Length: 174
Image (tube, rainbow, N blue to C red):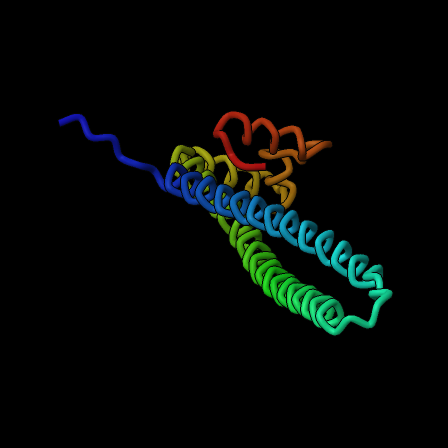
């Protein structure tokens, strides 16, 4: 029975990766909807040009006039249908974009959960007794709490360096 125990960090990273994949799927959906919208817009433009360029029959033949009127009506109906299709796609784009924005916020939360899980794991690996002894010794030496902290953990000049090291070491999201 060799069971591996999933750590909090592993669960947080898995949740982040899943959320990231969902955001990417939404972006793909939006791109496809925009492509469809572009095709409909091109068809609408072509239909409008066709309507504007319909020749008037030179003869006053009632059959020809009726056929031209019926063809024009069919073209107008097609134009109306294209407009409705475009409106539906525009509504879907708005819905998917709204969903994607919410998912991106969730993605930020997942990223923060990864850092919280890492903090918990790193904190659990620290020798608290030694750290406490060091802190008390510093206070007894006349240093205030912030000076002790600065002695134990000096501020790095560029915080991005340790952040990038931690990201790389623990496969954390950017």
